[in-house]
Length: 65
Image 1 (cartoon, helix red, strand yellow):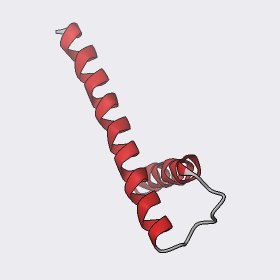
Image 2 (spheres, rainbow, N blue to C red):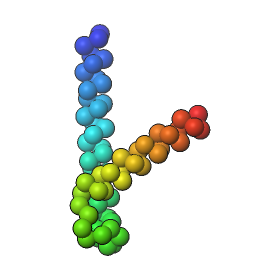
Image 3 (cartoon, one colour):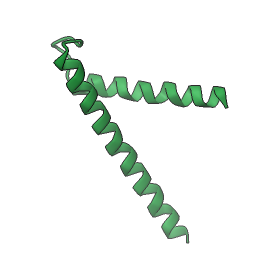
Image 4 (cartoon, one colour):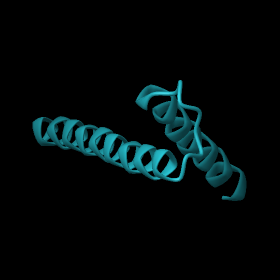
């Protein structure tokens, strides 16, 4: 049973990272389409914003629970 627990954790981590990449890609496309980010910014800046959103949501979840 421990093998499946470790495998499911790695699958969850992979799915979480894939979700993060897809979300930040969509966010980058939308922000660049509406010209809301500076022209010198690239995908990594938007990825940092997405990671910041995740950290803020986790902190709020812990505070409110």
